[in-house]
Amino acid sequence: MFRPKLPDVPVPPSALTHHEQHHDPAPRAGRSLSPYAGPVAAVLVGGVVLTALLAAVAITAISVAISAVILRSLLNNANRR
Image (cartoon, rainbow, N blue to C red; front, side, top):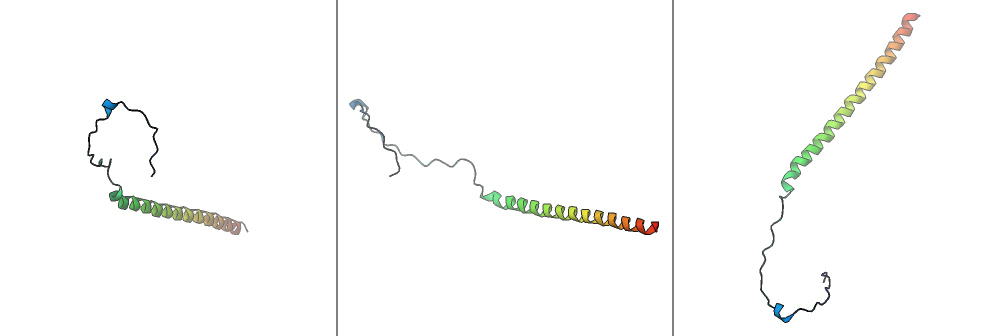
């Protein structure tokens, strides 16, 4: 049904010998990726978790730095008065 139609090519009568050949299906090249699905998922989840933790630490550090600057400014103004 989905095979292309080839044009008819005249064949000399001497070349009409027919040999039956049985072909076994060719083995698939390479290995299946299903054994690697678990470790790949674990690495991806671990990367997401570590990235989230790093972002949380960075946000906390920025917040502490801003708070320190504000407190220092307030304490310096209180000492000047």
